[in-house]
Image (cartoon, rainbow, N blue to C red; front, side, top):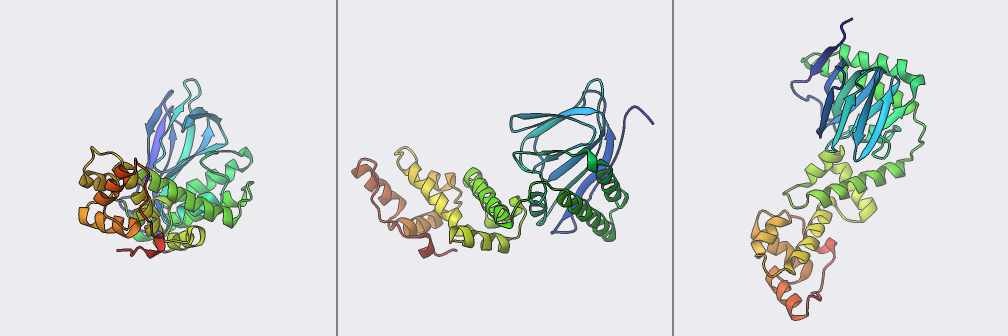
Length: 295
């Protein structure tokens, strides 16, 4: 076998919304080969067959070897590097879809622990990763076969999970991840569909999660969050109302003013005047989120 090799499959398009394989393959890396730092738009599992290397995510560093498995999360900066003396050989699969987050959440992978050190299941992981790659092709039936093999892999990881996560914990994790995404991206014109896609669930399921945990819809939560941020910016006299609207994710100034008035019972300009009159202490009466029509 050559010192280095790479066999890879990359899907031309994603045919299944529930779960799609984006890529799969095997690689024996050059000494010191590195990917990143960078971000992916999908989940990516690597299982180390032999050799060693280092994986970094969110300031944490993991030194890994044969039998270990590591996961890259979508939109989370990470990097990995093969050892100079004993570079690793691994099999991988990249995937995304509405079911992806729920399945990952039912394994031992988490943002706090993105690696698995379970050499006793290594043979089973390699076998299932081989099955995914072996089913590759660009026809629809190939996509179904690859996704079926991926479900088998994820079921294997769940079966050997040691964490014992409960459904309620998973639902809370969905909501917290959605809230985190909104907090980070509210200044862009994101929609509820964007939030649902990011955390890997359907819009209807996200709606049920927010109603259960927050007693409001995700769209109402997003609007409310944007209005709170707008109120803070209105304390700055140097920012025009139009600029504030765009800064909190509204592309239409009139719609921003209409939504703001529903929440605060006054226009943005009137709210600013009240703040200035009262030394920055707001007293405009607020309405509850439930009273705001979702347009």
